[in-house]
Length: 56
Image (cartoon, rainbow, N blue to C red; front, side, top):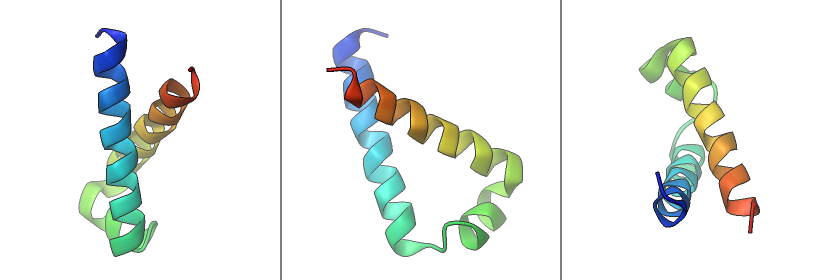
């Protein structure tokens, strides 16, 4: 994935994280919807998105 696409994807992931944190209990509702492994993977993606956006 080229850098502009990675940055755009990272920005969308951050928007998704913000939406989830505003509308759902971070641990209970999200975990119930995705399961523990899914929630762990999702938050790892959020961390990677932050790293991509901080590279500049």
